[in-house]
Length: 314
Image (cartoon, rainbow, N blue to C red):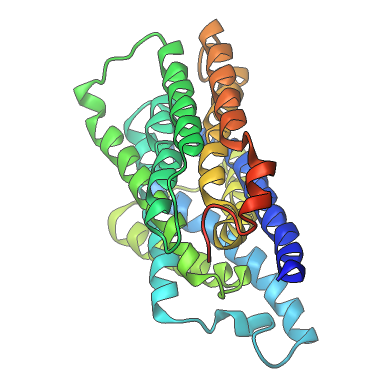
């Protein structure tokens, strides 16, 4: 038992760190998305996920040359239908709503509303087999939520404008879709992260079909093409492979709390780029988010000694 436990701990920590890396990449999502905000949203979705799919499929192709049989390489794409439905539904649903929201509401408010998903992850993870809702995770998530809403207050206008209502609703849909997707991933822990390449390809195909049916193609400028490439490689590419591994094997409630660092980083980048106004309240937001992370991880070592498998068992 002790050997199994000691072997499991590093894997759990490594998976959680992979999630932290994904969170850092997502901090650049809003800023990079503003560079392509004038492009049709489904065209952006199809283009960025095509880049992500090519990134993943190129890795699978290399792995296939090493392992021609079994689950290695392209064999990772042979997964249950339920796994495909959750993967494609989460990726396509979230980003279709997100890119649309950016065309219908200010980017800062879209980021704030859509980033309700970390709190929802903390709450929904308690419904998993063996899951428990710890007070420190809830307290940390609420502090993070307070920090994010402080970011919105830094914009100087807390009122929701009726003209932007479709964008607000789309952003709220983002939060619901992504939190549900992240929690359900725990039920597919045996599906390798490389399978995300297939979900990215399917999402790109759905985005292309929707674009051709509903939108008019706009030829991107050189700057927009670079923006699409950067989105596809980073927050829409590498980040999803890392997040897939993290949600299946890492500390899910802790990841939910730590995810509140992404909107603060996102807003900081928007301020530096001139898309939002910096404010002392932004520093307060950073302090609240940092406090939330500290609260969520407090007493982790003593508790780990008593409960080696963490707060949510597989």
